[in-house]
Amino acid sequence: MGVKNASHQHDPPAERWTVDGIEDSPDGPLARLEREDGTTFDLPLRNLPAGVREGDLLDLQDGPDGVSARILDRETRERRAAMQARLDALNSADDGAADDGEITV
Image (cartoon, rainbow, N blue to C red; front, side, top):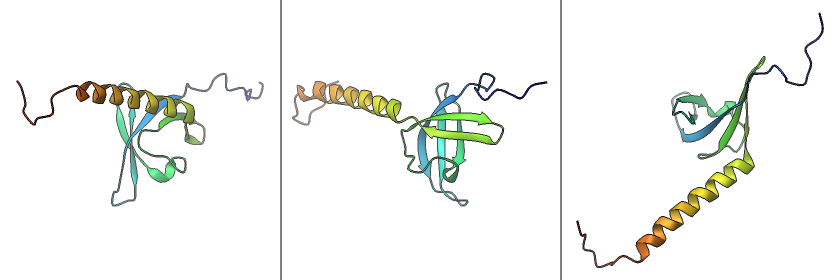
């Protein structure tokens, strides 16, 4: 019987979660994490990487020592840039509307 290869060939796949919110609780700050399928759970902020903030995309890996997390910096920046571009497009579409305070239905 051989020693398990350190190449991570048999490790479960990593999961990507978004930090949906950070809230105070009686037990300390909690991060509400959301998976792409809408599943959410709360995790003590102390269990996540330092500097994590709302909107960050995390790579969660379940291992023999528990769950480890790392911030996916590049993916987070790309997602934020895409969301900002969408917001800018929506706001520029509103710029052409009459701004006389009247609402047309």
